[in-house]
Length: 179
Figure 1 (cartoon, one colour):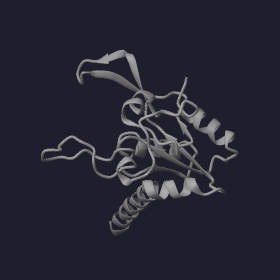
Figure 2 (figure 1 turned 45 degrees about the vertical axis):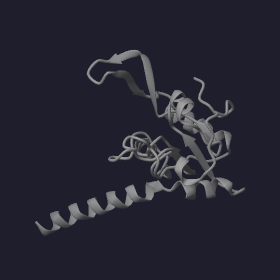
Figure 3 (figure 1 turned 60 degrees about the vertical axis):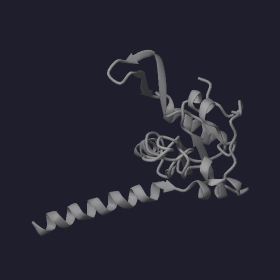
């Protein structure tokens, strides 16, 4: 029984360490991108339409959506368009690495709006599919929304945009996803 409990604790600690080593702050990523010898692929994993309305940082190397909005499918229950995983995500990440002369074990950092819905899941998906050094930006581009008070619902804390890092309402057409 003790051996079983010990094994379970070891698995839990291992999972927590793996989750912690996947997270990286926006400031840390920006510093890495600025290094001339950076062996990093920095990927914005948001749908381009979201970027168009929310903003963009030219510090990313490329936009490859992890999830795509399927405007031909309506989800009645949720009242939104259906969202599906980009079927070419892994291949497109591999191609972006190759274009930069990086191996599959290079550091890949993903960026989404808040860090939780696409950033962390996309990094985990990459790790599960042969990209062992995938990470995600904590709090993503805009950070979490404020829960209470007069600014409830606004994303005015944390994230790339709220950390004083460079961003713009304009998209860089050379970096945007075009299927």
